[in-house]
Length: 252
Ligand SMILES: [Zn+2]
Image (cartoon, rainbow, N blue to C red; front, side):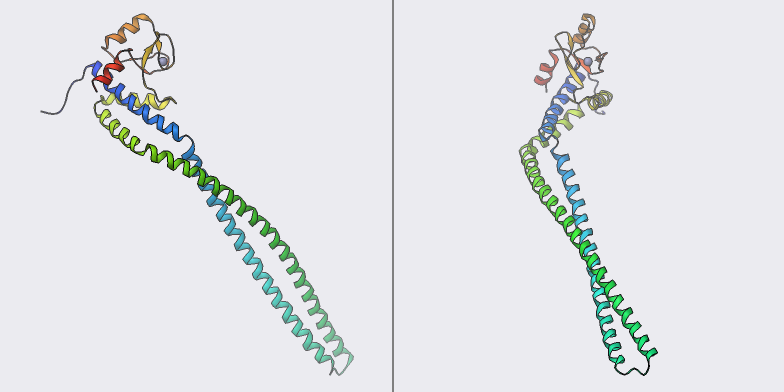
């Protein structure tokens, strides 16, 4: 025979209460971890970003250094040419030739001056970049210290709660197997809607234990009969009577 069993409403609710209890304990572990997992991953992203910024600046500096080398090379070439032209002036035959050579010397001197100006500008650019690089490095350092601290904290909590969480996960899987699938689906939907993750709540002082909306006596007695699933008219949570949670734990 297939493993199909019809559960009574009371049994269905009891299984659900059991599941809620386990999952609430899991929620408590998550609360303990708090924002740490998100903070850690944000910091890791920021550090990666800063590292690529660092690399980019270093590449730019390399490019500027190459440019400076080219300009230095150009100056050397111009100096060599000037030397060559000056030597030529020693054996000029006429004025026109002399002037032509002088013009070349002037041109090369101008080239040298221009190259020197380019080098000076490039050096300034490099010192700007060096400042940016220093800021980036400082930022990385500060963020890495912060990350180390937060990671340590998180790891400590994970280590402390790992076993517990694993147990809760196993318990929850087992508990889910015992819950009616349709009821489980609404339970999960309601659970997702509320920050405190409570989908099944008892009557507390004549009110819904989730939203504290008053429950009329007639409805309370219906809930106590455990003959049908009743949800809070205000918040939609599944309502159970005060005693059912105790029974659910005993019969687990
Ligand atoms: Zn409610």
